[in-house]
Image (tube, rainbow, N blue to C red; front, side, top):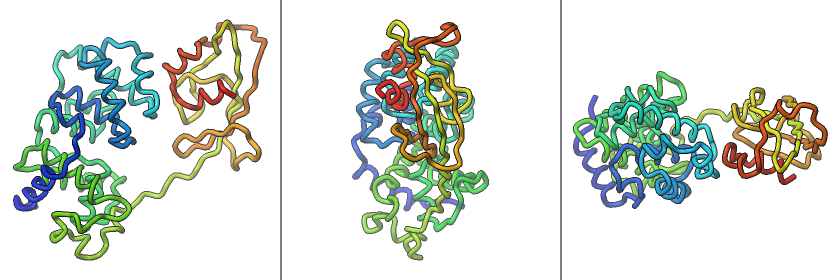
Length: 323
């Protein structure tokens, strides 16, 4: 199977006429492309722009990030969420800096922290023109509709089928341009829940449009059921610092610094709880206790409010401090 060059050309022509003016498209270096791709995970382009510009102003090169203080990185990441991404950025930057050369293929990039199948292919194709297709939510939506494929993209075999299809679109074309075109048409025209088919340059060849099933695709995975958790947060305050411990028990904010206390998974939501926090599919009911006496202060780490906001910028922590 191959994609006709006429279709490829039509999509690329549309892209060059309608593409958004985004700051990360003005640079070709792998570092800035990598930063933008990580920030864009779970976040809209509009929301990412100010974070991206501030981040690159503070850490303009990979060397700056590799040598950065973790607190500074987390402060600039505050508000983007999914803080494991920031931690992986630091670890990957250190490894690349040690190697002295930025890996140029997606297979090499996959070995680094935080580089999954999408990010690896995005960086290798956008920065180094490796002929591989990318597969994000926008591309999955476009490919499923255009080719009329009712695939469960969250399953490995069916995702591999979409991945091969994405790479076919890139063949014989400049990978950076075609991949951006595929993502852009998914972001601007082949949108969810209803595609703007009348604006699409490829609608005459779209199987989903021909069959009238475009808005039924792609298949959607059922959302995870909400889990309810009770968190008895204990606030120990000493010399303008708070006591914190590493989270090893709760499935959210794994490995992050949190207030000590007991946690429990609930069968049903609590009624009349004054402090509630939501993270992904977790609904957390929080009881806050201000503690005065503490026999062994060395059992905890002690951070000021400024310190903890840098180390764990989650709004959950701020809510408990302010409560």
